[in-house]
Amino acid sequence: MGFMEQFHLDGKVAVVTGSGQGIGRGIAWGLADAGCDVALNARREKDLEETARGVRERGRKELIFASDIRDRSEELADLAIEKFGRIDIWVNNVGGSDEKNTRTLVNTPDEIFRSQLELNLTTAFQGAKAAAKRMEDGGSIINIASGAGMRGSPYTGPYAAAKAGMLNMTETLAIELAPEIRVNAVSPGPVVTEAFDKVLGAADAEEQIAATIPLGFLGTPDDIAHTVVYLSSPASRWVTGRNILVAGGRTHRAYQYQQRLEEE
Image (spheres, rainbow, N blue to C red):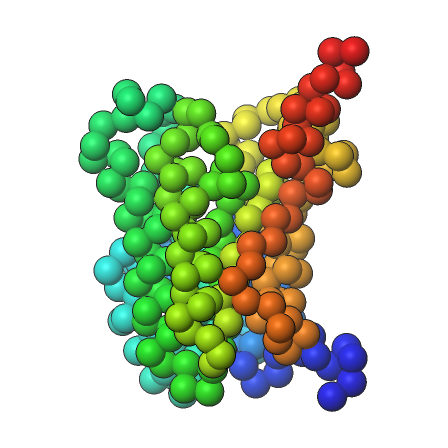
């Protein structure tokens, strides 16, 4: 196999949860570009139709599963096997904050905390189980985590706690499922998506965040998709249990350093 051929995924089948918009759509399209047929999942069928159109334009086949994925990973996996006959790659991308308010942890209602764990951690746990049982020839499981799970995260504590749990689970699964299945995580930094724009609501807010990034600009879904394709491919055959932070050099320490420079 030639060097660049190790990044190809021709004939592989991928499942991407939360692929109706944003990072998930970018990942689905990236995997299709690399040669995968893709099983798509999100709550809104209209969003999935647009993602599916992009998969078809790239010459690959798609499956649409329009549903909240909580407690339904097994069903999605069965549908993927029924249509494609195999699962090689499973990307646990679904997640995010399901409430508009920001608050400290001690002021967070129990039901909100539980909901965030279910959306951001339990879905990945269930997805990994569903995938592992069906990866007869081995495969790759990729969890989309967050930089918030790598540090203290005031006012988004439930989300950050869930993502921190995902990172620990990634390492545990990698050990338990080796050598047949590799398990890794990708932690995106600030990425411009539909949801991101809704939260910010202004171009100057994007500029303020970009100023905290050493490389000087926000990411795009393609930046995350490139890393996912790498972790899905034979090129990463000796990589498991790792978390790759894709954030333009933005870490908690880098952010603090940037603030000190501005103050000086």
